[in-house]
Image (cartoon, rainbow, N blue to C red; front, side):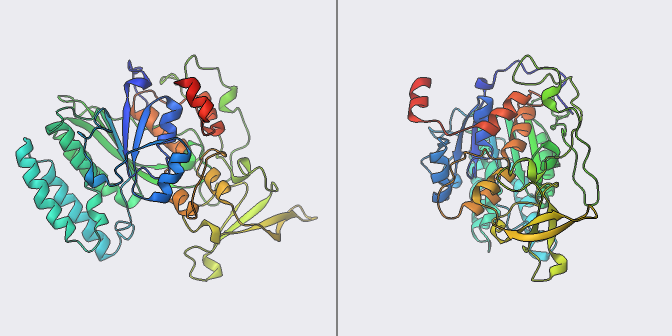
Amino acid sequence: MTPAHPNPHQPADFRIVDLFAGPGGLDIAAVIMGVDSVGVEWDDATRATRTAARLLTTDEKDVAALGPCDSQVKDANVLTGGPPCQTFSVAGNREGHKALKDVQRLATRLVSPTDLVTFESVWKQVKVETDAMSDNRTGLVLQPLRWIMEAKLKRKDPYKVVVLEQVPTVLPVWKHYAKLLNTIGYAAAAHVLHAEAYGVPQTRRRAVLIAKYAPGNEDMHVDFPRPTHQRYRPGVERLPEQANIDELPQQETLFADPDITTPIVRWTAMQDVLHERPRDFEVVSNYGSGGDPKKRGRRTSEEPSATVTGKIRRNRVFLLKETKSGTKEIGEELERLTPKEAGLLQSFPAAYPWRSTDVAQQIGNAIPPRLSLHILSCALGYGAPAEELLKQLEEWRPPTVDDEAEGA
């Protein structure tokens, strides 16, 4: 699953434009890697967080109003993004299923033109249809394809790498996109990745597409990041503590040798990152329970968190006390999870400078930076990120004015 040969390119050779960038879950991973990244983000509160984190963000907020030839993004040779997914999160019902089919049908039309004039005509027709949809977010999922086609036909400089991610229900769209990208010179594939399998202290599934421009070699294997940590499943015991990655032979570079197989270590638990809490506690989720106590999710501090959403403040936290028989029982209720703690469960650095009053929603919508680091490192051809990079992510702090002056 890892690249067969080291990538001859340096991180500085890559420049990312990140569509629907959010608070920077992918951009901060790029910064750690030494890759320039500029995000396109609509929400003003989220843009404030990005500004505080010193992440580059385009002046134009609307992905649909920009394109590969615009001055702030024209030098990007890597396209990433996570379009809004709300219309697909109900894919089991009629509306969600229809949205999936509509996007697949329109996407096929978008990649069929071989010249710019034809493409622009087709795009106008597609846009008329998406603008008339009851939920205009459905059409936003087509924006990455528009950017890919414009880079190829208008800019005449295709993106070298494309990475798209969303909730698992979007996987059929990504698989369809992968087939379409094969027809225009890309080797592409899509899979569902589990965040806790890469050391994120949270169970979160993401449908990920990785595509590499390889005209004439479109059928080559596309590598996905190799899991480094134990998968979580209810009822499965956590692996015993064993040799950690930092106890393995030191790598000579910031990017681990792709031929070295890293052993699986146990999952990262909530207690491993929420250091300001008592070691033993239980989180009880009311989200999605409809008030039925039997449907409340429960995770102890020895487990990864359930998926962090914008409703995380609804979760209740209780102390776990050991009884005389050695079992543990629920004790007094503790304070609910703070925005900082929610960010830590998403693998954001503790010092991440969250802004505005809707921080929980920003965090819930973000891709975990640690997962992003694994995905980007693999997609750009570096294999698994070395422990030094993962440590840098954990210890990252927003650069000060002095830091920026020193680096100028």
